[in-house]
Image 1: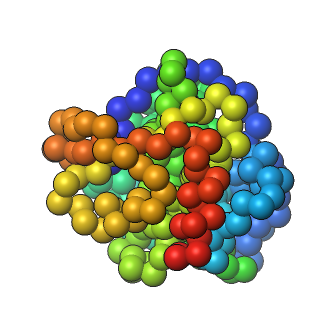
Image 2: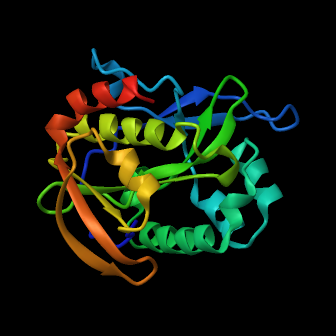
Amino acid sequence: MSRRRGAAKADPTWITPIIGWTPSAHSTIIHAVTDEADRQMPFPVSRKRPRFVELSGEVMSALLDGDLPAASRTAGVTLTGDFVSDRARWLWRLRLGQMDADPGQARWMARQVAVGDEGLVVGHAGFHGPPDEVGMVEIGYSVAPEFRRQGYARAMLIELLRRAAAEPAVTTVRATISPDNLASLATISGFGFVEVGEQWDEEDGLELIFEVPADRNQDRAVTGSRAS
């Protein structure tokens, strides 16, 4: 998915401290992403019940350096090798640059996705930045190879749609996908996304652009959760 985004302002209400699982030697408070969507009913989560947990600048810096043990200690969870792949490190460099330019963008950025009581990290997800001048946000998510084809991508998508629907500043949700990425195309099916164009991404090449109104996401996510 493309990662080029513009800046916009939004009310920072997503980050609330909760106690999360950590390795026994590194007890810490994890700041999980929560927002008004968590209080809106009915709006079910996927049966996978992913938790979006803060991926701080300190953690991203350690990942950018390729220091997975240090990043895991700082994050308080065990991150997978996928977090230090060449592609992931390119993303951390981009996100750190965005956060340096505008610290207010941090709450919209990539977050580690944990599941289960043990806090198993299966990938990362988030928005490419805050909503632009017309209220559009672009979603991005990645599942670690060992957890693919288990419904986690769809679970991440459901959570992103829920959170977009709860943000008053968001009017449109965008996903950009390579026409050859059949798995990602299948993931967004059933959520009301409509192809609106295409673009050339420097990292990923040709991408199809899909969009859906944010206020349609609640009903679509209900439908999608039943299939996850």
